[in-house]
Length: 385
Image 1: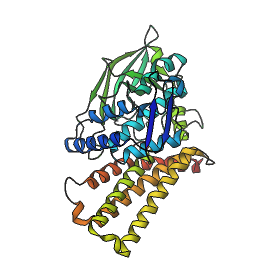
Image 2 (image 1 turned 180 degrees about the vertical axis):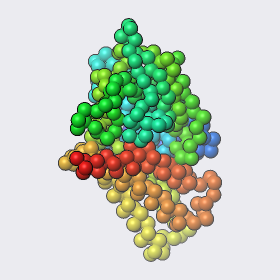
Image 3 (image 1 turned 90 degrees about the horizontal axis):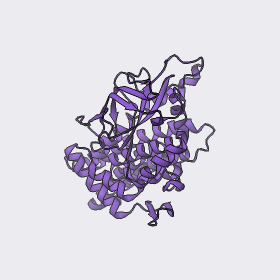
């Protein structure tokens, strides 16, 4: 499978299909992944490839220059990119997520101003929700937003583990703007009462990115810190109603977009490594090897199936299906990589072998929001009500 996006010069005719990731785009992203994994530096080259490929516009409606793709196709696209460049797939996933929140929550003016830029690749979007001390469930935020006398806003705080830090053109920032005391029965398990979303431009002088963090996996994803120091905004930079971000976050899982797609792409890449190794060594003639590869293929297909179901949103509870897809696919990817490591043995135990990158990237998915343990909590929290 791959992704093909074509637009005419006017940008009005947008055709989208998940059939083939353009070979040139695939090769370029793979080269970027190798280089960025070696240096640990933000993968600016991969971002340039994504901008030029027009993939960034898939989640944007057609009337604003995008492809209007649904969650099934978005998940498939993320999977395809993850198979060659995990870091790029995370940046792409976050861009899709922010684009979708703007589509859902934005005003007509925000749609007209922002969506064409996100669709064309002129702008890359990022989420800045996490911060030290707030926990995986984004409660107890230290980042505060206060209204000014002129009706604008000032944000102060610090965000951690922000993907595309320093590369993004717009950040979706989560801040505490009111009381965090929830009304009875209103706790969604993720986020807190009184939180508000803001769209902060990357060139805002009050937004200061720091990419000095060096991750073990997803090393090209520019995951770092973002400081907000006297960051001044107008009220038109607010996304959605004031104080209701937690309810928006709760609905995100019902969108069908899932980080499980990243895990499936990485698992498929590891499986492809195993088949290539078996082919070169003539191991396919051995029944034990073939059966082992069949079992691994079954795990990948099962993970792909739960991701597909999440994207279809036809489960009795689509939000729960999305959480289960992230849990299952990320766990499956970790298992598949581990099994492939045993198949390759010492052949894969060298610094430059891509299997090592797949393994580190796959383990990172389990730690991304919502983390796997938070997924378990969100699934089970209703059992105590």
